[in-house]
Length: 178
Image 1: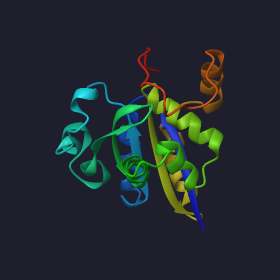
Image 2: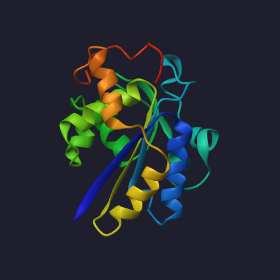
Image 3: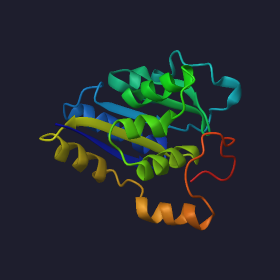
Image 4: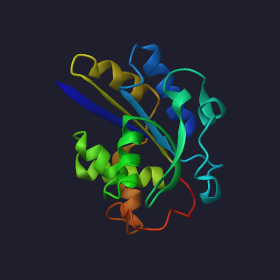
């Protein structure tokens, strides 16, 4: 059986390190995804993508395939892996869902998927791994070892500000990033 393990991080650099550690532990690029905001992305360069992997974090593995995609409600993000492909495919095909739909179709609860999408919207990064039950503890240990965002604390902060769920029709977040 396959499990999807997802964690969020306050910045792209932390998420990038997690991806490198997962690959070093033997997880393949096809099992791993990364989606995050990068401070240099804006609407004017949403079409750029060639070479961004080498620029933002590596010349091998998943990070070499990083590209820049625009996700409704989030804006431009750097992304690679199955999650990015699924979210970008939904956007290109005119289907609703984007990152939330991609995560829920992989077995993530709607509440968690909304939280992860909002975290990316506010400047964080998400790493997700789809792996077998026997390898899941290794993925979890690596992801937890990098000190991910405390989901419950962050959700409480979001809700105190009036947030209830991710809205892909909303304008990209322009407030202070997490």
